Image 1 (cartoon, rainbow, N blue to C red):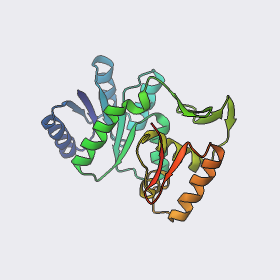
Image 2 (cartoon, one colour):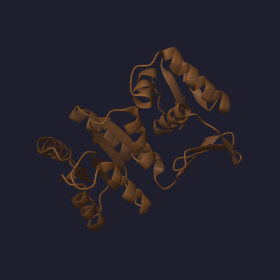
Image 3 (cartoon, one colour):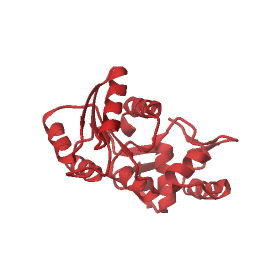
Image 4 (tube, one colour):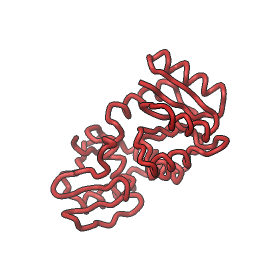
Length: 218
């Protein structure tokens, strides 16, 4: 497996490269976004890791250009930009995961292998079937039932995408707080938003795992 890394902090880039190479990956790193893109134009990689604030072209713009060209390579943002709006922008641009600095290299290993295993929602398809006539378009962020659009709030959209991202696994209230709101939120508030979303879907689609969290079956 070949990994391409965009990270302008030299020590961190070296640490990531050495760590992943020890795991058996073939790794190459760049500090500039334009050089990173040039490498992707000329060489094939299996997954990319992107910092955002880098010289040349920033990480958001790099992924935007790739997706506009139809390149669906799995992408993980690794960045100090931790605001929920930045996280949302990353997923809207088409990333598969978003790791907030500082992080443990073991976390990077777990997330990277998870993305490779599930191929980022199966990048070959932008529309996810949820069952009972419901579909979700990952590119246009639209929920439909039998071709009829169902309006979602921003929080409901992010909740649904997080559940799809972790399809087959249980999403805890803590993870909802981190990924949807970017900060601690009262669990009762989380439940309110999830229950509103469940009412728009068939309740059996989003299942409540008592005392643990919520899940969508794989």
